[in-house]
Image 1 (cartoon, rainbow, N blue to C red):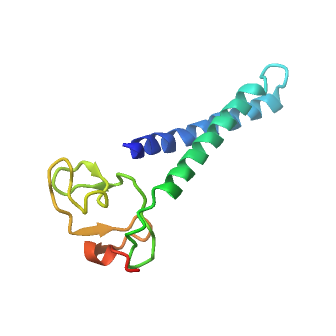
Image 2: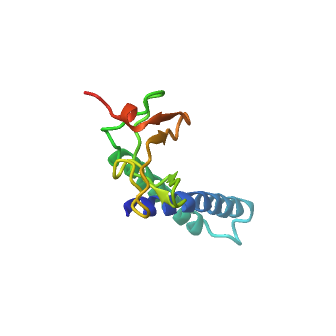
Image 3: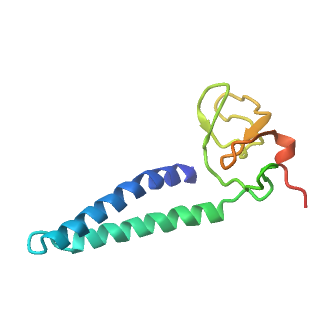
Amino acid sequence: MYYRYYRLVRRLRGFLLLAALVLVALHFAAPGRFPLLPGLVLAGAWLAAFLYALGHVLLTRRRTYQCPYCGWVPYALDAWRCRGCGQRVDVFLQLGICPACGYQHEEFMCLRCRGVAPRQRWLRLG
């Protein structure tokens, strides 16, 4: 469930940064008409969202799995599409079984290098 908040924060981060930059630029273009405080508040909100996303990635690593090609360690995120029902799932959460339709994923794709390997090759030894 916590990965749904992560996706929402990732989407909001871009908007917050853009809005903060626009408001700060407007303040410097016309300081009398546009106050600096709203731009700084949005910049602080962007920083909080960035730190939340970074903390999520660092705290939810699935240390028992590792990409056999590039060594990437996945984190808790429903970024994979189920081949059975098309719903977004976290394939590492229940050993490749989709919680919605029960489809068994035998191969996982790396989000970094896009390499596809069987589930057994993803298991980290040692």
